[in-house]
Length: 201
Image 1 (cartoon, rainbow, N blue to C red):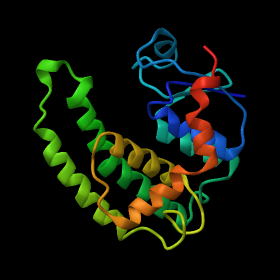
Image 2: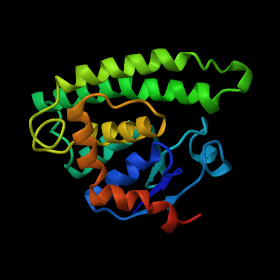
Image 3: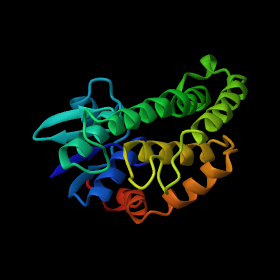
Image 4: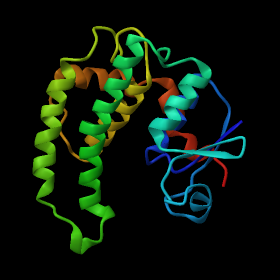
């Protein structure tokens, strides 16, 4: 059984969702960042942490990739052109979507108040809109980013899309709005969002 450490109100939700999509059993410990049980597994205090055979794996993308490769689902095989395209999409989303949203969060409530620059959000929203246009040109015709097969970047994009809506970053691309509506309705994601109420710790 896997153990997932971290609140579902963070990137930990990506890991919980992946496990639900894979139909795997897991224990969820909803600890906040920098809490003692998190630091014991990850000295940086960041979540999520996946514990496998008493070995911690950190960083949500690394965890998603590990689970997908380990169970042979939600991914294309390593060494294929499809996997290269998948990994390219993953990096694009981390660089253009996740990074902008995290920077906005840092200047909203993460950094000490005297270090926050509220004006930065205007430029971040502008970049976020441009990134949506670039992404729309790369999206497949099927229900998922790469067409008919759901993969790791679908989890990252949907999490970022939901995060953007909460942070009031406009979703300007109609195709992306429709995509997010479909993905946010997935039963496995709904189960992952309820995980906090049935977790341990």
